[in-house]
Image (cartoon, rainbow, N blue to C red; front, side, top):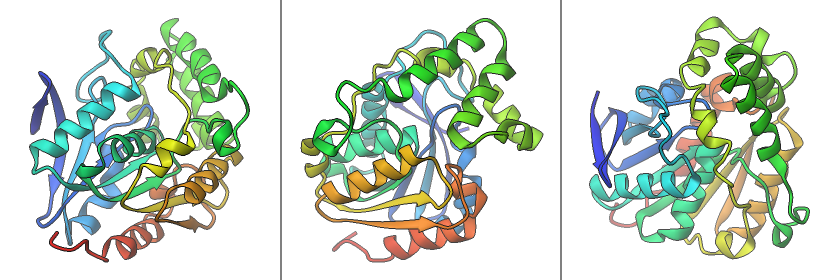
Length: 269
């Protein structure tokens, strides 16, 4: 499996296609395999890189730094290593990472796609003061996993994020995918993720697409609504009938929405 070293850390990835680079960043308890339904369609137009954050399959969390700040630096370093500019798509926690890359390193991102970015908004974006938000729920999931009750913790996570009954309804390969990344939650539970703020959103200078599922949790809808109103050049697409797993639940609609947005090329790229 190919990898690129960033700050002495090997970032593993899957690659397909040719053309302008498009980097995909997965969410919590996932890895590069999450993007399987997108690889071939996107590779028809782009050189696609699906990353695995360090601590996720094929590596395992072993106590290393597992924070938004560290993974933002990893993605920024990866983009520099493949040429210094890329289109960037992130889902859930990966959407939060992509948001930070575009905000803190605007020279690296030519177009941005955020699929139900995870986290909380601060008061400047209409969020509650000092919200514990998702972090409190993740701590209880991590406690179950640390105690060896892997499926109990993952069931709690899946049902909270994707909807009640999700874990039991998932096919076995989806459950196994999460089991193989379960230990990453032990690092993520202590990441102290800071909320989205108006200043950071306004620092994003590239064209931005935000997506949400039509049947998803209200917190994700709220994030998308707040960010589309704050990022200077942003638009929104809703994928009907889907939850937080929108890119897998309706890949045809998801892929079409992303490609329709990205087919407007930035000059010289």
